[in-house]
Image 1 (cartoon, rainbow, N blue to C red):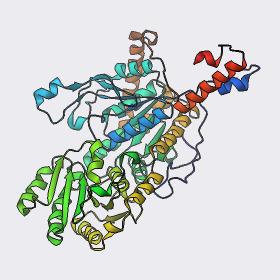
Image 2: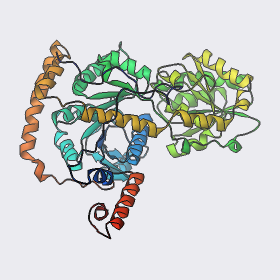
Image 3: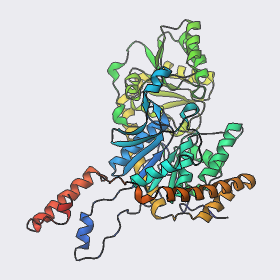
Image 4: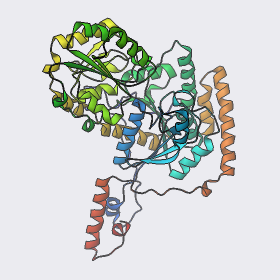
Length: 524
């Protein structure tokens, strides 16, 4: 049996909430600039050589216009990778621009093809049929020609897949191994071990991730859960926590009402987010405190249960439903509140807590999953996932006047110091460099040996599918030769600071060479 190639020890990049900035890693970034050929001015040429960049494809079923934690993670990570000077594209399936519109309007408003989002981020909305919850229909080999065409056209040298329930992400890891590319996978959610759906998903992940180069989890709890579920080698599984763009969540105490306490709830109104707990919490708090109101942002299948409770308890003037809140409007809702309430039943990492704390809100949350890693105890009260515990901690915040003792800007600055998407991107690039330059690619026989370890029956089936895919790739290579695919040129792949420094050095050398336009000056 082959052992999984990875880092020399089980490490966690980024650390927990308090020591996030001080954690060192044993993986060292390898320079991606190859040494230049020997010449009299080798050192000078290396200084003038434009910085090379990675070409990364982020693959997931879940992306804009759908909004959620995974979607915002991919968006924020891609933005920071581009600012670090790397080329990033996103591959997802086609979306309807207006999910809430009627069926006729949705058919006329289709987000498909190639789109550019601010960054700029190039997004391939592939014509793939989605099933339930915007998850693509499994195709095994049908999407391979398109996926291969995109990777060759964009010159991609690394594939980064996201989320266990994403069909495209699972297929991308398998395709990348067959095409000779390294792959990185990020796990965003916690799953169990005792229900049929989780058992099937765990077995699928164990199969598709047999050839993955490295794995990232968004919290240490998520990392432990993933290792146990998939039986993965811990040395290649790393923890890099999520982050928040604090510049978009600045406190504004002037927006708060002085004589009342506003409790903010912003989440998808589904069972997993603990809406059933919220149905029991609101009547008790409203009957106990006459100066407390609730503002609920979000939509979902459980919204009807909340509306029925409000009507039954006659709390129409105490509970305000905002519906689905666009992400750029979340801050405007948060700054109106004093307390943020999170009732999630399972959570690998709650970005909403960071956004609320950045806006200066004290948080009351369920103590589940990776939530204890997000904020220190003096910024949030953690409760058991039941109504009585949440009511007790929410009452404690109100009785002890904690909201008046909180300095919103102090909360904001603390979150800014603890979490940064730029730091997340740098830690991720460290892993990229490791899998690109320190891990050899797997041969076909080595991949088969990995698939065999999945199980006696499942391993045999996986090997048969792998052999089928191998010959299918050969057929696609013959029908669609690489030389017939137009390659997109790399334009503007270095950061602004590096580019300005390179251009300045080029102009300086041109002056020293009596106006010679050769070398770096000509490249610019």
